[in-house]
Length: 122
Image (tube, rainbow, N blue to C red; front, side, top):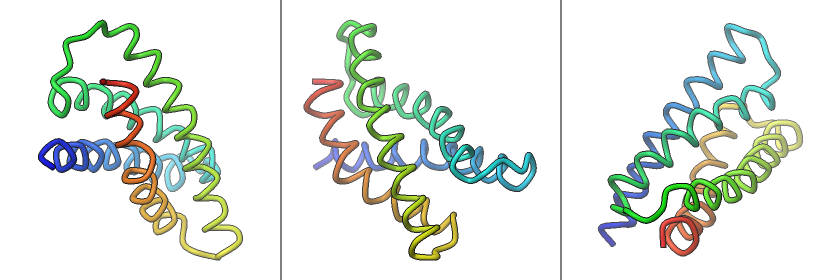
């Protein structure tokens, strides 16, 4: 349970970095929210991998293989989160930030944590 709580803390920290970049890209740079979401996801991924490897899972295994596995999981995450934000925003008419929060919580618990625990940092 302690690992799950730490993983959710790492996810929140990465989500915060991700979301700040997304908001900046939408509100300041005027990029579409889907492109901005992917941009934020890149920043969040680097943050999440670093914190997950060092603090959550205390992994000392070969970093190259973990990066490759994380990249595979991250690609799935980007498609999943972008799709969910798009559906919530365009079809359910939810504000893009609320969509991002909702999709992030859903994927953190149901996809990201299990994939990191059993595939990336095992």
